[in-house]
Length: 330
Image (cartoon, rainbow, N blue to C red; front, side, top):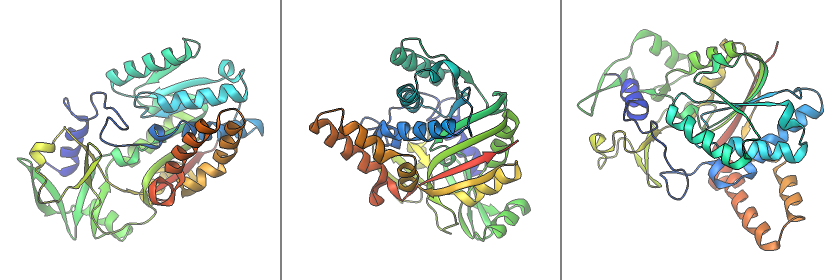
């Protein structure tokens, strides 16, 4: 089978890695910005609140998260919107796009416990079912979870009995490699269809996503396995695919030029592309921390400030992670 099919089975098959709830953070295989600090979600919500105040986003905005895992990010965003203007919780709608029933259940339970049933969460298994006039859509680390093909010169990877072999690249893929000046690395599969489904589900939207990667092709392999906070390159001699299959996370760096191309073809424009640090600071992260300092103890402030360093420090998440803001206008 093609490597993309193998990766899809690895992550999303009947016994795939993402089919069952996975802990994120100290007890899991990896950290995300969401698990690092609640100020990540608060900053995004603060940006949305700014759009509402100046009339770009309506007060009845549909706030959507795609790939919400346990629901922490959605909860953090709702919490900050309530802090800004409690009436927004009644005027807005909140939705999660999540195809897996087990994760839907975990999200509903968590958000119900957090808000005592005061916030209604809609669930959709695919974005084209949103049916929204306007939506503010958020996703964290979603593009790196799409299956990909592995390419090297004029060859692509296939898998047989958990072993890689190489075969000729078909013409459509060869054309894409030439367009992006790519000789080797990962080529994501599914961005175009995803963008089309997003476009079908909303008349207009602001879509903000964070992920690790660059706006250009590195022409090197970044695909890697995460297991208990350790990273193993897929081509490491010590890695046995059969042993890791469906038990560990599998990911790669995002080619944001491909993301922009796919969404551009579906009618979106790229409003912003910048580092995570620059985006969060522009969203008001430092102002939120200063407000927090005036409402809490020095000990709690210093503890939260240390967590925020993880989000914006260049050597941790700040520069490696990027924010892309895609906009669909009426």
